[in-house]
Image (tube, rainbow, N blue to C red; front, side, top):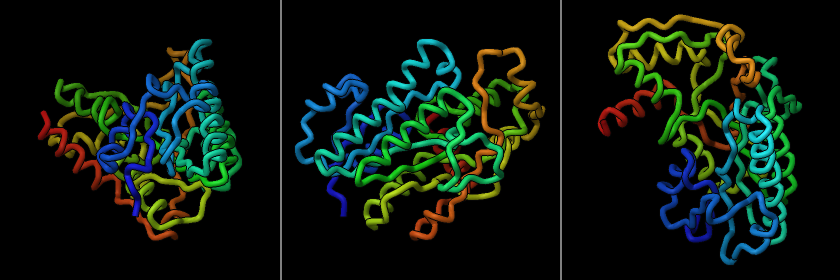
Length: 287
């Protein structure tokens, strides 16, 4: 059993932070205004009394913004320095650190990515997240969850495409980036599983299961679920899409994660098609 009162959720305002608060309503949840993880002083002075597990959902996730001078500094501060500060605090106070990583730590040249693949980020964002992985791994008790294409409460790809459908817009979408959606509910379930089952510390890939697809095919599936198969999706390549955006960060083309390690612990994520249907039905009810 997990005592919510012993949990600290960092990054409470993000998609995953909100989902974690729903799972653990009695947990303490903080955002950057309450705890600036980039500041060693604030982390050192924070009251860690009673905290047994830190769920770090904080991250700088503006992939293109990280390529700018100011964005580069912010990404390194949050994604690398901040994680190192948390890892030191976890070691000092005997805390389990749960940290969320990304497929962007890889260059996407492999069809699927295992937990043992060498780090090979293409972008500043990817490099900062890779550095964060290294820092988090120095905490004696750590779980690093590498994930991809996260969808939750807030602005995301699914909501953007649903918005286009509502406006009767047929979009052009990248068709050479392949992966699986990961709904925040899947991440929350995986975290809860690892903690409650006392699984071995280390790195675990976590995404929804199912046949990998391109962003263009995901869009077609969204339109089908919304009853808008009349809308067309025009395929394009990553290179073509970003041709007019020289400031854009490079993206890995293959984002599919090998799920065999976490499945071996007894947790099997649901198919992304199933979670997408549930997500869209919920969104429609809210609207």
